[in-house]
Length: 299
Image (cartoon, rainbow, N blue to C red; front, top):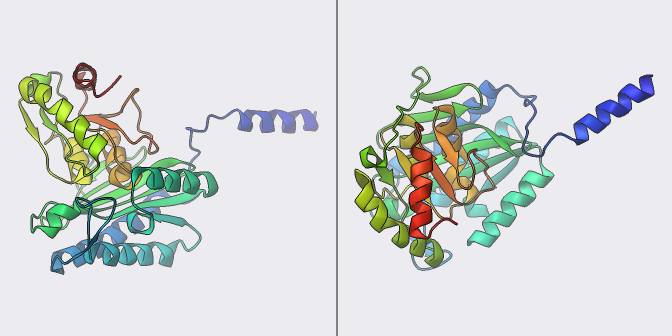
């Protein structure tokens, strides 16, 4: 009887879908504390830095300043001081390009139980040109599912945080629920201006219809902050054709924890999915997807 029970337990465990995460052995409050502390360290550097262009990465539009790696080093230092055995996946530690970032994420999630996903300075082009719309984004995934994340607007000193199953907060205020929006005609829709040719082409395809059908279109230049603004409800939707995990890990969790909808071909945030469609909910997600299909962006 004991052997049969043990066998049944093993079989049941093996049948758990890969997308289902068990509860982390570390409290979410501890993970979120480190995410916030590390993001604060980067935000301090960003506020005090003078933008200095270091080089370009995937192409001439993909900028890197001396501040990007400095922020990443500060974030990693905080994480490893608390969780030295956790894996850290940082943007500036991965070769440029979509293929390299996708492979790095897949390898990290397959090999490590805890993976910290870090964008030390999301919105580098804005930062390099003196436009104060950028942010550090720090998230942690457990068994492939993002469970905590923090994004900080360093110039407004606004702290966005979320923990899976525990809600979304703005600067430690009570959990925020994004106001619903059911009509695209009443929505401010955010889009990306990506440096890669294919994703830029998709943005160009989508813009005419969204410009015509929505209340307005905004392109802020920081995926992390645009997702945070969807979570708060100040933006009602945001879509982009190709983003890396560090762009969306923290913000995607925030959208869902605020009661919004996140996904591409189906609802549900998956950090491995490079295409995103995020809305505040209320039926808007379906209308945004229909517009993307009509524009030839989504099949």
